[in-house]
Amino acid sequence: MTGKELLEGFSHVDGTLVDEAEWEKTPSKLVVTASWMKWAAAAACLGLVLLAAFGVLSTLFKNGDAMPPSDRTDFIAGVDKDEEESSSAGATGSSHTDMPDEISVLTLSMDSIYVNELSQVSSEASRVYMDPELYDTVSWSREEVLAYYGRDLNPAYIPAGLAAAPGNGTLAATVAEDGTVAEDTLYLSFYHDYYEDGSPRLTEDVAAARGFTLTASKIGLLSDCLYLLPESEVKSSDIGGVPVTIGYRSMPCGPYDPETHEPSGYYDMYVAEFSLDGIQCQLVTEQMGLEEVVKVAASVITGEREIVVE
Image 1: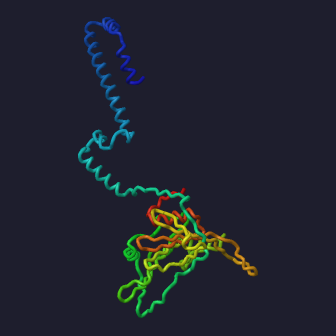
Image 2: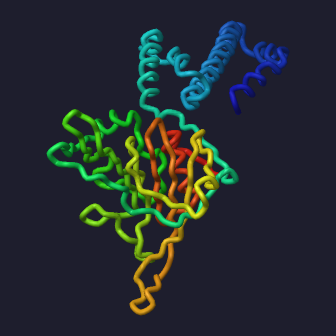
Image 3: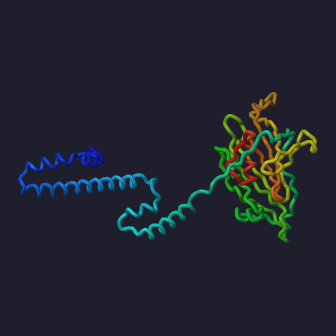
């Protein structure tokens, strides 16, 4: 029987039954018995109140979400509420700084992405001979590269399975005696694996690398892309408010037949070209799908790493 049922049972006892039971006893015991009954009833009520209070307290301490932490200090012995509140506020502030910033999501539509067919992509940009007596080669650290370009060009989104190449973010700049920068090409590479010398490792099923390289330059010494269409007909796509020209070419891969010289297969290569604050950028991808190419380019432009392509 619960305390509530016991209390309701007491309230339904007929008073005449109690009187009759008491009058069967001697007068001397009447006073003692009646007094005992009063005290027993009071004790029972007090017990029920304490039992109910204990049940409420147990529920409060077991259900942490039932009441705010600042209110629970009223039930903790030896805790000053004002001190606890200030301590909790301090703890909340420190934990908030440790929490990651809310990540926004950038949604792009593939219907607005144009792909132009490439006829050729030069492997190396056109280079101008620099007289070593007039120019020096200077190694720039990541901090110096960031200061020179004025923004972090590392893609915020990296496809799964790709890793940054050793030395990413540093570059060897060519600087004249008067401080003029003559060579500033930055290479940021992300591939599935690397050889000991740091070059991208070829995949087992296709004799080609899998990943991408982002090349950037303020001077404009980038690889040349030749499109099949006339330059006036090449279309650009709007990605994050920046015009991006995307090219595609099916690339042959070895081993080649020794007699016919035919390749053993082909893989996809995409190139995305765009400019950011006077910085010319070129993204060259190998064995990557178009959606992944768009997401990487968008992450460089917008800085977002949560990108949805529909």
